[in-house]
Length: 322
Image (cartoon, helix red, strand yellow):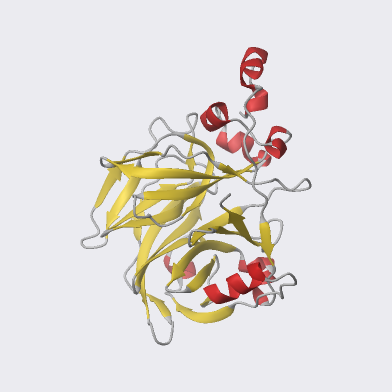
């Protein structure tokens, strides 16, 4: 439930809260990546290359150099970027995992990376994690032959599993996609050791709508997440009162729409994950349609790069830090 859906007394009290809004800068793409069937589902840096993870078993990753991105952003007449393709060697999960639906996220740690996977068997969703390595010379990425580790889902929500992965030292924190108060009694997340594959849990705050990807940790143990809501997901997500809108207010286009497209900062503190004191970054909404943002990385200290899957198309955008 968004701010404008609150009772009149709440609206009166909070009517003075009007949050800032950030306009997205679209980075034009060309080539195969613009085909909706590629369905980009994850984003991370490998050294100075932006890695875009297709959801499907296509046998490759897309890459864009940081120089190309800056050249596009710095140009008054930018040319479309055509991402390179690098081999992505994987087992045939379509035969190994019943109901395999695709890859959901990727996170690099040096030449090693973690990938989350999603499957639907019957009416039940299943979430997995596996690991691989990338050759620093050829840029060939390969997932090991070990069967992915399945992690029980905290709740069953159609089409929702572990959408994000965050590497913290020798551990990978996996983020379940739906963490609202009406969905989960407690919004903890799994932590998987990259040393011995042991599994533990970490406390995490309730947050409404979806968490679709996270950045890496910064020097202060903070990271940003995409917090997205398509109004058509109301029945699935059963959103409660949005505490972030109550605290910080809503930007102009968010006040006039049920959709949510924002970036929220968290921090690791005393062995748990909590909200930082940073105001969410609310992205100016498209008047005609929601944009299903599926990947996020920092672009140095300039801002963030975010990418959609296929709705309303294959979009790469830059969100500046004002």
